[in-house]
Structures are given as structure tokens and as C-alpha cells.
Image (cartoon, rainbow, N blue to C red; front, side, top):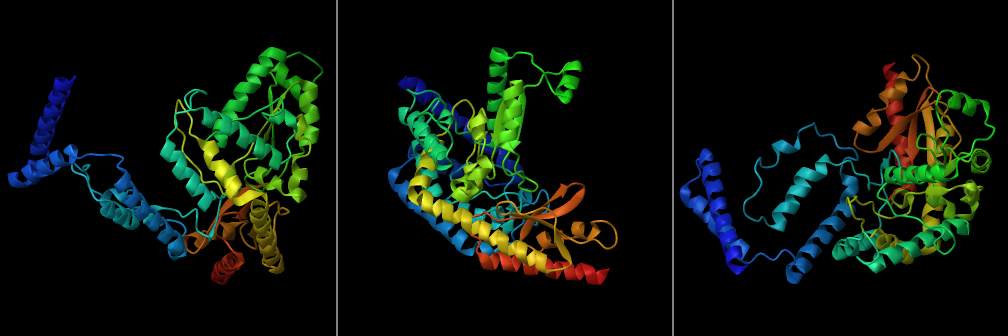
Length: 440
């Protein structure tokens, strides 16, 4: 084993030197420099410690300081990136580094090359799509999650990962007052996925399994009968609490009765607004959930829990992050965060309604306001031109098409916005609208 290891290392060094000679002579780099590079590479391999506690402490502090500075100055950057496609390839080396680079140089590249190419989802002036919230507790949980680097494909691979997941999911269920049939402590349970898309696939698989076990033919409504005549079989019904375009809410109880009658799997997609139902005044939007077979919600959208990536085969220790967020902020502060965002949305809605040039298209739901500049010439032409809001770099909003009408969406819910950011957004919208009206 020892000799084999030495042989591999020697062979690797030879390959590295050969690669350098063939690669860098094309660029007329002197041989002395090439040998110097190889010596540096050899030395670095002799002392290579990918997880050294001392350097970990110092470099982690440097990254934390970098992140803190970013958040301190986030309002100074354009909210939406204005770079051109392919910009990054002109700023970074074509070839990967052969020798290690310093963290200082890497962070400088992040600041100079990466941040200009980011749309700043954490900016207090980001009002597009639905937010991806973050918090100190979320960062701390993410650090611990990355630290333990659990490969949790079954219970024994990390018992705490499985068991904490059960506890945290029950906590979430209790916060929104789900019936015991959804809790591990009852007759249910759940999974922490990386996205709503993953959850949907999981739910569809469960629905199909349930269908194969319990399907029976009954009396269907005309639409279902037509589907059956076409060779289709009803299987899955999805109710939404907080749709993406307008924040609309489906009547879960009524849909639940339909699902029960026809033996359909009823899933409640509350990706956006489910977290808001921890507030007593909003819990009624989940009335009827006891008739559902499954429910999903996205803590990263409004629950101050940093979003993460998905690892195939296994699963991350996601419960640890959510557990820390709930413990660190607790119900009172989480409700305050949601209620404050809704209050700011009400403020923004009132500003829109006061300006006769604009109209609110659908009643505000949660912290989402859908509005438009009233068309006077070509239908909705001016609303399309309000792209000027985003290209200004001072704010970012998105749009939707509701009943054939192009509307602007102001979605409040990120971590940093305060009332003055909402007021400034409205002033910016008025400024751009006035320019368009003057032109026409």
C-alpha cells in the first residue's frame, strides 16, 4: 500500500510537470517559471491540509467579515444585474489554477467579478418574484449543516439527522395548527426537500401508490366522465394557498370534499403563504386542510431560512437549519416578521390606490400587490415599458398576466426591507410612469 502510494504520487508529479510544459510553453512562459510553479505545487501538496482548524478559523472569519460588509453595503449595488451574457469569461482566467490561490485574491474576484453579475435577492429593494429570505440564524444553521456534512440516506448513517427532522417538521405543523394526521407524533409525517418541485414529485409518487391501492369507480362529475371517456383517470388534485401571480387562495374545504368523493389525492401547495399561517389572523386560509393528503411550504420564502442546494442520492441535514431558525427567532418574532411585511404591503397598496393613474387589479393577498398603469393608448403598452424600473438598478419588480392583463407585482417579504424602501419604490414607479406619460 505504501509503495503503491509513492508510485501514484510520483506519477502524478510527472504528469503535472508534463502538463505544465505542454500547456505553458504555448504562451512562451520561461522554463524557470515553469519549474518554480512545479516546486510551489510540490510544496503545497506536501503540506496540503484541506481542513486545518487554524486556517479554518482565520479564513472563516475573513469570509464572515466579507459577508457582513456585503450586507452593510448591499443598497449601494444595482438590484438587478446589468451585465451582458458571457461577461464573466472575459474577467476570469481561461485555465484553472495549478497552484493554490489566496483567499484574499479569491474574495477580491468575488467582489469585482461575481457580485456585479448577481441580481441581489437580499437587497431591501428587491420586490420581484417571491423572496428568498435569510437571517443570522439561517446562516448559523447553514454553517453547522456544512460542518457536519451529513450523508443521511438512512437512520443509522446519522440518527440525529432523521430524528431532528421528525421533531422540526412536527414543530412546523404545530405552528400552522395542522391536524395530528400530518404529524410524526400523530399518524403522519413529512420530508424536508430542497424545492417545491421535489416535493411535487414526491407527492405525485405517493398519490400514485395510494391510487393503486384504493381506487374504485364511482359517480363522477361531467368533466371527470369526459376525461374517463378519453382514456384518462383522475388521480391528483392540487389546491394552492398563495399563487405565484396574485397570491390567490383556493377553497381547500370545498376541494377536499370533491377529492373525498372521487378518491383523489388532495395536495395543498402553500409554498409562498403557508409560513404566514403561523399568524392567527391568517390561519383560516388553511381551513379544510384536514381533508388533504399532503401539504408543502417553503421556509426560504418567508420564514427567514436560507435556501440550500440539493445533493443527489442522500439528503442534507436541513432540519438542523430550520431548528436553529425556529429556536433563535421563536414564534413571536417570526409572526412579527410576517405581519410587518403585510403592513408594508397594505401601505404600498394604499399608495397605488391614491394615484388615479394606477389601479390595483386584484385584491391584495398576504404581502403581494398586483397593479398596473391604466392604459390610455395601446392596451398595456406602458406597463411593458415599466421595465425602466428594473434597468434603473434602484429596485426590482416582476410581472404576471392575470385574466389577459399585464400587471406589475410588488412582493414584499425579504429580510431587510423597511417602510422607507417601499415608499422609495413607489416614488421610483411614479417617476418612471411620469416619464412615459410625458413621452406619449
